[in-house]
Each structure stands twice: as structure tokens, then as C-alpha cells.
Length: 264
Ligand SMILES: [Zn+2]
Image (tube, rainbow, N blue to C red; front, side):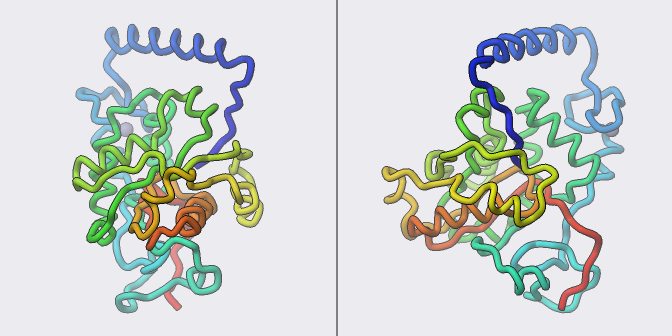
């Protein structure tokens, strides 16, 4: 998911504000137990979500499109592709997601991304491990979707890099942090049509010259927190494939899923 956070000359002020907010948060967390980001229930143990909200997360399970990972309404046999995958095939090979991006998943992702809950990364990665099991065999490295440097500076960490690190610990597959660079800040994707999203991220990513040797011939797994239209993942995959990557798969924690559909 991309959204524009321009820092510019107000950056120092924003940083100061963030530091103050973190300080207040620390003071508050010492005084009060943390709350479930989805239902505001008190949490005993920093589990990210309360037990009830965890149980409401909607796991993406087979049957799904072998290419896009979009769930099917019924099982019509292995290896089937969705209409979308045939009509408009992505640059990447396969995409897999742990859960549907619904209200509970959104609350969890937002707590992780904007709420200084970097500690949630191992938990989210364990769900991704389950969803991505078909992708790991023969994979050379995880490649996090990069943030533009201004956004990285404002947010202080790249959520995709944190998820990649946690996945690497679980699988022993390496993380290549510098295989992709975001060479231009992109407009907010929220509210844009599918084609506008694709246009928005076109040319936004590039493999730096000094990374080309690492990318050529490699089987890579691109990692992000949320997959919406797939335009960002597609732009990243295109850049990696142009630099000679042998294959690019995509693994995310949550993906936006339209109402149930049938395989063709
Ligand atoms: Zn809850």
C-alpha cells in the first residue's frame, strides 16, 4: 500500500512531533495495558489483536487462482487460473497472501505500520509463512518493496523490510534490502482506478546498477504488507525482471479480495 507522506521542510518538525508522540506513548503504555487495535479491548500480552479479533481474521486458503492467489468460490481442480490472470497477466509469477484485507486486518496492519508496533512483524510473518509455503523452494532471496526515502525518514522503518527480516529468520532465505530502489515518490493510490494505479507507479522502481549482479538469474520473493490492485508489485517485478531476475513471486500479509468468484 502506498500513500504519500511528503515531509520536505517540515520534516524536522514532523520528526520532533513523532519523537514526542513516541515518548507519550511509552508513558501511556507503562500506565495502561495496550488495547486491541481493532475492537479496543484490553490486551494482556501485546498479542497484537485480542483472541476474538484473531479468530475473525479471514485466512486465504485454497482453492485459489494458481497465479494471482485470489480465492475461488469452489474447488474446480488444481492449477486453475482466474479470468483476471488470463486476461491481464501480471509480470510476477505467483502472488500469495495470508488474509483478506478486511476491517480486522486493516486495524492490525495500521497498528504495525503507523503505531510503532514493529514487534508484530514476527507474528505477521508466521501467517505469511503458511500462505507462502509453495514459494520458498528454490527461492534465493526476499526483496522488500522499498519506500521512498522521504517516507522512510518520516516513518522510521519500512514495514516490508521488517516482514522480510522476520520471514528470513523463519526460512533462512536471505533478504536483499537494496535490490530495488524507489526512484520517485508516488501519489496516494487510495481512490485511484486500477489503470491509474498502474500509471502512478510506472517507472517508480529501479534496480540500482550495483545490485544488477545480485538480481540476474535469481528467484526472488517480493514482500509487502498489503496487495491492493497489484500495480505496485507488478511495477517492482517488472524492474527486477528487466534486470535479469529469473523469477519473481509476491508474498503479502493481506490482500484486497473482491466478492467470491468462480474459476473459468
Ligand atoms: Zn479485538
